[in-house]
Image (cartoon, rainbow, N blue to C red; front, side, top):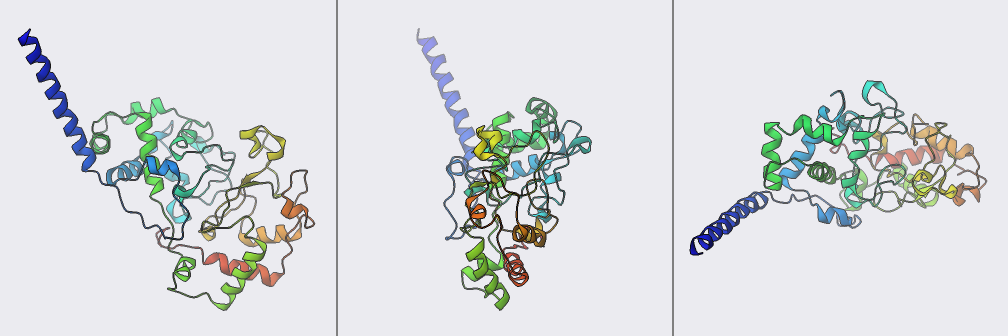
Length: 338
């Protein structure tokens, strides 16, 4: 009996030591400090459960750039989400494997740690749940997470990083999703001219100041706050994508009141993210303003701001030019690597 007890005690001691080693890896993987302005909104709850760490971000970035996530090893997340375009691209609609055309325009990746909804239709509420979407979508990567893991689980660099982040070398779907989210959480854009004006390190030009005042009067009902989005879903009467798979927010809710309603996009770095609209309907910002001025498509669920104003936002040519001047102050050259 004593021998059995000694063996059992040794087993417990061994496991205790093993746990200590794993914790050591976690301790040696510090959270990174993000340069978040005091005037930014609160971080979302998912961020607080998966805070970016030194090696977590490194691992996530490696996943983000790995073309083995696609069925034919031809594209990665970064193929569409390019830093020079604020992690969007210049295509009307995303282009996936075998040059397949996606349903929607590629959204930028910036300041995701503060958002409550992801994707054009808000189909995901946690960033950790989003990476699977492009992996399995036929028009994007057309793969599966099981296939991805089989391709990369024996990669020595991945084994090393996974152990530094999670304490052992086991690669799982959850660990992939959490690491990609950590990398994307770290992409904070807050060094635009607007931000410098906000902290009294710069001043708007006369044209920019005039544009800001016009913006507050005619645009800020939707594009408000420091991210320049209220994250609401609105039908603003843009040209309709005739693809039968498209219904906007209604794809998520199943309600006609949400038909062709899309999440109000942030206007930070908007200068870099052309074309504009859910499927790239507009090649430049001036054409967006012209369309809103000339009148949008009417519908039963057209946003009241437009419906109650003759289905348009009236703008003079000078107002349009001043708005463009102001929106350029939202550009963050350091964020896009310029």
